[in-house]
Length: 242
Image (cartoon, rainbow, N blue to C red; front, top):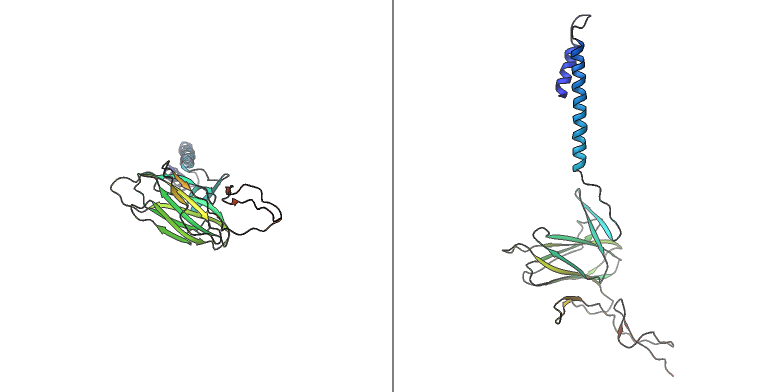
């Protein structure tokens, strides 16, 4: 339609002689075609805008991950927070954000619930530079637990934990699993903090305990012997010397 309108205007403007023999109907027809094309462009523009997804905005407890013109909203997790998740034929990768400080030492673990045919690949990287991997860990087929660490945090900031599947099972990918990022206390033993409760069969997290240090104080510490408080610290009552 636009090409036709242009041709009509060229025909109108290129007539020889002082008096233009092209009738008014030709000019009106050309203008009508231009108006039609303009309305078609407006309709097409509206259809295209409807196909463009809205701009993603991270809310509270979320982070925005962008890479190569792709974007996704991911949850922000905390150290020692037990995260339950799953993979399926339509969901073979996921990610989480976590804020950490320079000098901290962490271990990242995933543990699968049976039955599961997942073999995890863990990628740990800065959120603002996702190709600058801090560490990568790959699980072994048939082994439900994958632990990567200790990882020393190079700088304070927000980091990205990406989980994907590297197994090639005969059946479609399917399984539930837990994720745990643990900050290691200085002097604490390196161990696995994800385990399966032998009674309930559910995945549980063990909070790391700090090393036992003799306490000398004139005031008692509030609490009862051996009582665990949030944060994994064992509170011990110290009786002042007489």
